[in-house]
Length: 423
Image (cartoon, rainbow, N blue to C red):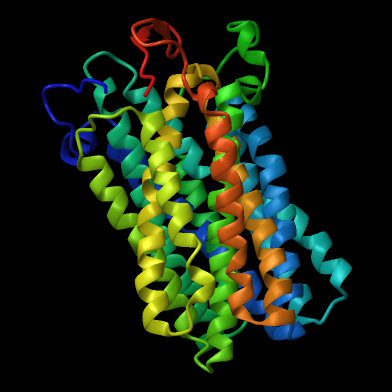
């Protein structure tokens, strides 16, 4: 058990933090397009090729590219500043996404779609990790550190709000307006939102000058606890990817193509609701135990998806799966603040988000192939298997999530020390 602060942290107190709103509002706008990207690709490529497997493969290339390049983007942001990395990134991303859409609509060969998907994924703006890094920076003082778990919860809620709106918006644009409208809107929003966020230079974390913190020149992935969290995020990414493709396939099977955006929105809403609750609770147990409990619940719920066969049941169970994701996701980002010094947090956050993208990409590919060959229900096996494997790995590596034994002080950033939280 761990002790908590006497005054319960809340979202109002968090948002009253000096400078917070200057990056929270633009950050929300700038991350919205990412929630639209995979769904828009799947819907467009499936429309032009008639294959969920092909659509999933193209979306997977985008996700894998993001997973591989995101940590490098985070490391560059720590080194040179967020704006210096973000501005060219959003320009490249907007052009790449438009090119991908144009090639798909022109019935270009599959290799051309794969080629265009690489820069589209590699240049995805890492706004979420950048916002989290800003929270860690502005809360990095004794009278504010108790708000860090609340900030992690708030960011999860913000992410999930975008995943409530994004897939529904992408589905509506692609099915009602034009098959390429989702990617076109994504490109425009990426450019506008990204440039607006980049303009908020006053709250970005200080750059790490070469030689200032020599130990941090190594990758954040060299920290054992970060590697354990990456495994957890791979499983969560598989849930996102498997749900996206399999719900789309299910909607096609029952002749209600538009319902997939609604069902995915309900799934994301469950995550958002649970995230709000997590941020409002003064926890009596430590983050490592919360992660293991939350992941166990997620695995149990994901195991039931492949047995469902009605819109109503998918709405109910999808909501519960989403609610099970939030505690694990929030706690993983909270643990990063304990495990990683301040000069490497943006990179560490991008390793986690990159792992989610990689897991999502792999799941989109596998679930798409299974849905093509055997039907939507087989696609839902992907989240079940992936979370089970990740849970087993998490339990095996749980010792790596403790920065130090209880009662010891451990480095928690640059220039301060804090009491370690173990369980």
